[in-house]
Structure formats: structure tokens, C-alpha cells
Image 1 (cartoon, rainbow, N blue to C red):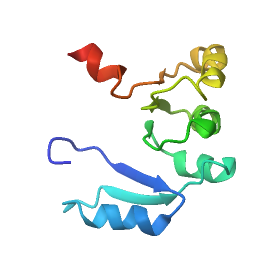
Image 2: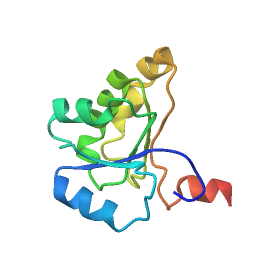
Image 3: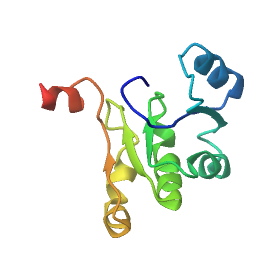
Image 4: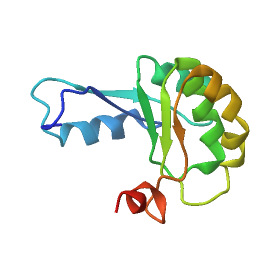
Length: 121
């Protein structure tokens, strides 16, 4: 937060946990916001993705990756996940034409093994 002027939304199915995380961070400019999002509830995902530029799926929830990616497409934002297994990503690859047509960037399996950090190294 100290190296950016970006607003950050922390979302999850336990809104109180998102707020608990936020209060641990130094946010004097009130750039952090908590939102409810349940990966099994597409409407909650669409609402949580409103006004987002990028959604980062950091939860180990590959079975819901397609729900989250579809919400990103609907909201017009980019998508990045840290999933480290192929399970759940087949649906994302099938979405490639829609992602390309929407002019969005979707990155899957950006986790640590091997993931995006390995490419940068």
C-alpha cells in the first residue's frame, strides 16, 4: 500500500474476516474495502467485482475458478489466479475466445510452483 495509490478490495464469503484483515493494514487514506463474495454464488461475485480492474483468486478453490472468471468477464476486469494444479483450469482455457474478444487478460496457475514468480526469476 505504501508504494502505490491503488485501491484494494478484499473479498470473501466471511465479510468479517475481510474486515479483520483490513484493520491489520496501515490504510490512512482509506483505500481498502471489504466486500462479500461467495465463489459458489455468481451474483455475489458479480457484485464484488464491480469497479475492479483486476481480480486475484488467492483461495484454494479451483472448483470455482470458472465462476470467478465469468464474473470478471461480466464486470470487465482482468483475472489472475495462483492455482497450482490443472484441476479447474480447463474451463478457463475454454473461455479463451471470450476473454480475447473482451480485450481482457486472464492468467491461470500463477502460483509458486512453477508459476509467474519462476518466470521472473
